[in-house]
Structures are given as structure tokens and as C-alpha cells.
Length: 67
Image 1 (cartoon, rainbow, N blue to C red):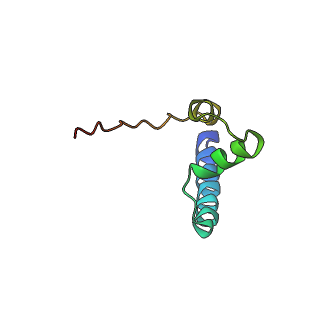
Image 2 (tube, rainbow, N blue to C red):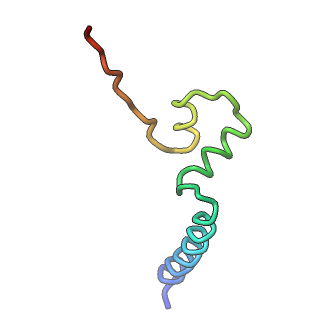
């Protein structure tokens, strides 16, 4: 067996275990790292959370209402 194969097999095993434990909590795959960051950075801005967690910040478009 190659080193690459062993690394991929190990990764797959860990990922399956992680997903099964995560499913029990009701969290999505990205939420634990964000919650862990917020534990130590209460009140952090969304852009700072995204940078620290290596994710894209969510974007939204505010609707303008005309009366």
C-alpha cells in the first residue's frame, strides 16, 4: 500500500466518525469551528469570524421598499 492510500483511508475513517458524531448534535459541518471561535471572541464581526475560520463571509442584499 502506498502512503497516499493510507492517508486517504485514514481521512475517510476520521471523516465518517466526525459526521456521525456531528449528526447527533444537530449542527452542520461548519458550525463547530465558528462556535469555537465565538467562545473566545464574543461579539466578533462576521468578516473576522470568516477570516479566522477560513470561510467566505455570508452576503445579503437589503431590499429597498418603496411606498
